[in-house]
Length: 100
Image (cartoon, rainbow, N blue to C red; front, side, top):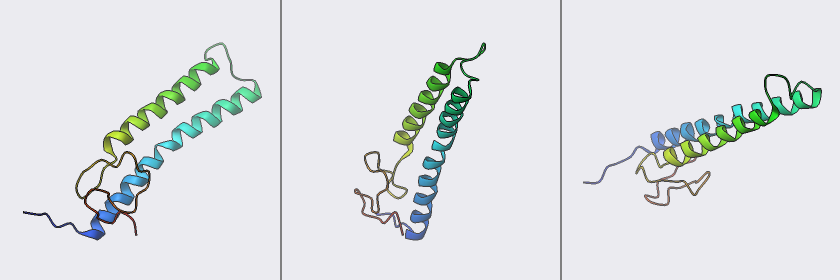
């Protein structure tokens, strides 16, 4: 028995997932901008924290975000992985439209 998918719901779910993935980038960019500004002003490196720790934290956030994306970036209809496509219009497996 083949399951019927509501195209409107699939597009909405795909948009919600895509927005969630891009929102993960905000803390990383803020951390990198903050580190650059604090380093330019002369606050970093300081007696408590070194610049290297800030960049390591940013790298760990990037890796965690990448792992999360690879694990959860799938078609909302057929649940097949979309890891090799950043922003597909159609699912390569089931062919359902993912964007309006």
